[in-house]
Image (spheres, rainbow, N blue to C red):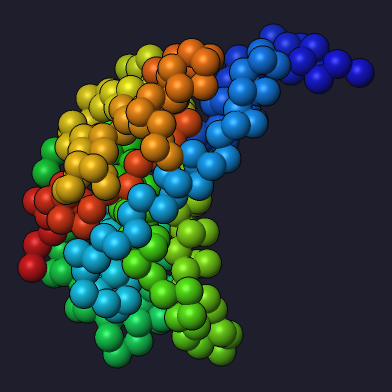
Length: 288
């Protein structure tokens, strides 16, 4: 039984099947060229180093500050989807499976904020009075553009702070002992899936038939605010999403025998982002 033939048959009835089968950032695993996969075997060290790049970045004072930072982002995202689902301007366009998907994403964000608030307990910061997203809900297209920006920023935010959460932070939440670092990394994965799904939604005619993939290629913003995909501070620790340098290899597009294109490399890695830059992106929508 040939797996590629099966997928080819499925694509005849569902052109987007590969988008659903492949996880965000899994572009390299979908390549059929065996030589590329062989070359990729040399990549684990580079990948491991990439995840360690944020070590030593301590722009937030302690674990509570990191968790409150995450809590603010989750509150923002949750409120964004609550407002979207209630917006009269989206009632005729955000329908069917798309409304169901956004409802699920809203519920995920609610679960994230509830968990983080419970983990913080009395150390949880007060919620902002409200979030003002301006004209985000004016059209279905603008709503999805904002959603993409918030989800992509969230993915970068979690990766940027992952190494700042102590591995031994195990509060009791709802009667259960949870490891906060494990939970944070799980949330990071969920946010990446949200971002991928929103990007697929932007490809539909109702959203303007955007030419866009579930993952980020060359740091392209696709209409979202450019700082979401740009470099953070310091640039050496938080490069832009178009970064090709990983694990001490100046360019993976040439460092592994010119096997990969810049598009392949940039799509294969999420880059972390410092909290100051993330707050600068989200801050305009937060009302004290």
